Image (cartoon, rainbow over all chains, first blue to last red; front, side, top):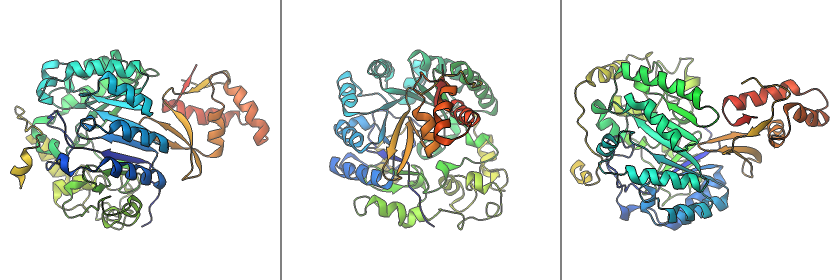
Length: 363
Length: 89
């Protein structure tokens, strides 16, 4: 199966993060600081990515700002012509660093907000970061960055979606991503506590739709659907190994940040291979390109051209076989897994907080 | 928003046109997104300077493409307006 040019690289430059959000998309087994790629490694990866056709770069984590070389990486990315986004909690985004990032040519900053209710925000983050976020938002705005806010929606905050939209507007965001929790990594671990009810989801969708019309032309609102509550799966990143790649802190390169779930695949590292070889030739990127891997009902389903059978990572995480249909799809009997999860998601939430010291426990 | 000949389109503040030497193609870049442009799409967007109206743009392109392209320009820009990548004054 031949590959085309990727458009987007998500560089997870670290897993270290001061926050402990129980819906973090990082894997349960995180990479420690001494296992991270060096500055020179990352610069080489960005150069190779641009040569491969990547146009969009996300500097993400963990919290990317725990690394002191973000400015140097942003400078390098800008020189390559990449459109670069810093994906940050805003903890560590001081005026000094923001100014240096602006000089470096960084174009876009995305700040996460946990909740408009400060007490709940602190409870989710496992720390008090609200004040730093609000002050960083003002700096980002003032320095003229393109400014996005990302809010992950879950059972404990989704009822305040209207309030959170107005908060984002008052902070001057150009874009607001309202991302219903996707159940990978820590979020899958905490699924029962995070899953909203059907009534909550329907009410929030109505509020978001109204707000999209109201804020049109000033703040773009992107609403990421709660896939468990949908009838068909999401077309994950436009297909496996088609447009998108992720480099983890240790250099392992993935077709999607959830792919480490798929324990039957071995992901090659930019420490051992050129990014171009990994994209074009490596077994993991070849695994689910095209349609040859599909089972029924996907194989003969007309929707395979729309959603490519859904998310491979979700199929593996929930069924143990990454070639199955994404169980979100109501056309597969595997859907009972999702329906059961929706039913089980009752009762009071009990979070398992993202924490790096849990790494040893898992071994 | 219905686009007409007198509408004045302008690129979203956060979007910028660029040339990708890898694909040998013009591209529109914006937060979290890329549009790969064909020659005519790029020609239309190059003229979206916040001063020219849709009719002005069509007039310029008419000379280049020999024919009335107003409907095509409206159709193309309407799709980008729908995606909030082009704003209309």
